[in-house]
Length: 362
Ligand code: SF4
Image: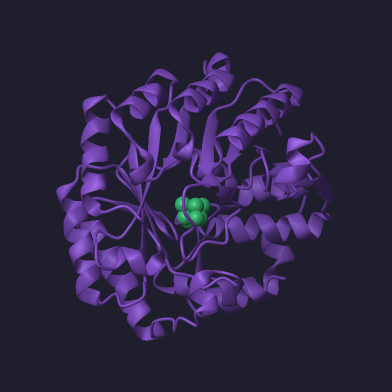
């Protein structure tokens, strides 16, 4: 299968959020320049130049200065003819109209803005340094420049957050004319500030209620849920992330970036010093057919559309229904899963049980 998606990792951040376990380092102008050199070299070595989607994530890509953003845009500009969606992640406090113009000129079609909450009192608890006015300003400026595909990242289950706080965030979202939302529950990862400070996660029942409230309210606002944590207005599903969830091929550039090419999984080392010396360690693992089948199932069941059984059968030359007969029968009987026009889907009421369901398919 051809590779049609490219992920580009920019690891620099101006501050470290209290929940973050992503691959990131503090921004340094000189180091960022060296990193862009290495990134360009790595891209040249990829013998692919026809992508449908490019996603620049981080870290904080917008922590790069204006000159560096121009440079980043110029690396990919000659390859945009076939690209249907070109996304970049932004943090509000790092942006200005000049940087937005650079992105627009560079061909970016989709902005993904890290918001987390519109409550200025809660933001410091998670180590965010912007305020919600920064988000409004950024969205307004982006619209003025003609960006028509804006996504916001939000979180629930934050320290001291109440159901009313989530309601207020949803009301604010309603007032903004945006196209896509990623809405994640806070996960306490090891080695994060929140974990080290022994932050007590919110009660599971309250978290469930928040999730129900988000699902219901966004539905009323015409955001269709299409993945466990993602919602889009018609025609604005994230094409790049859909490729991950449909278990299609993708390449990754930069430290910590992953790729999948047919039966091989690639993973870059997180070591910045190795990367800058041109010694990026790329772990390439050839997975067994069974491992790929499980990964494919695990990714695709996150989607509301579910797993395309015909594609699966063709990919692995198996009969899906026979192969997974036992767990399928069990979870269909319990109404956790259902079959619909060659797709296996999770009953939306049971998305919260997805991990437990998947265990039976291992
Ligand atoms: S901005 Fe993103 S990558 Fe950087 S510390 Fe915060 S969550 Fe992590």
